Length: 281
Ligand code: GUN
Image (cartoon, rainbow, N blue to C red; front, top):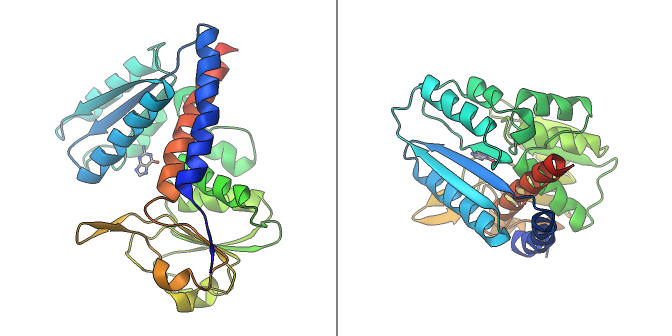
């Protein structure tokens, strides 16, 4: 039976450490603030945004959630970001994705000054990750790596397979694992014989967006399986991995809920505290 990569426990530990850092900043007269922007009414995004606000509250971080209507124009959204870029109370700016179709996501993300880009989505931060320079790393990939390292999963020289090639998860986690000296394969919807790849993986990251997509026959015995999926099936949240059947053969496995999602929020808090610490210097 696999060792559980317990996001609840690991995130709680992370939050404890961050609480002390926020406190230390406050004692120096430095406040910490995060602005979260949500455009439209996407139900999943509303849940995520609410959880981000709660985490700020837990740490004593000032948070402001700005909810804009679906009909918001590119100009209006960019004007808001411009205002937040200049707002000294805000160390981080997060625009919840996905944005409504009529908005230019890449242009919006470029508008956030890289110092306040706590999601690590600005091309400057993405480019730094790509070229091995220090920058802000996207929260979900950063959280996944933190999980693997905390659990003591060996990485160097291991075969890592990532299913999914998004800018938010697939591409950055592939880059982080490459930096840890894994041999990385990125699979996606056009990959031929996906199982042939996944069965070789010592580390398997599933970021597909399809419930129970990764089945036991696709997993190598003893592999570390990280489930990034959040799928709603009959009102229940399930991951991309068939947990019940994969857990008995995996070496490590992250559950959904209580896995990667908790780490994502923890890393968002860490990126926000780090931005405030940079400001304080
Ligand atoms: N949508 C899904 N994941 C994320 C994330 O980590 N950050 C933002 N801003 N939007 C998302």
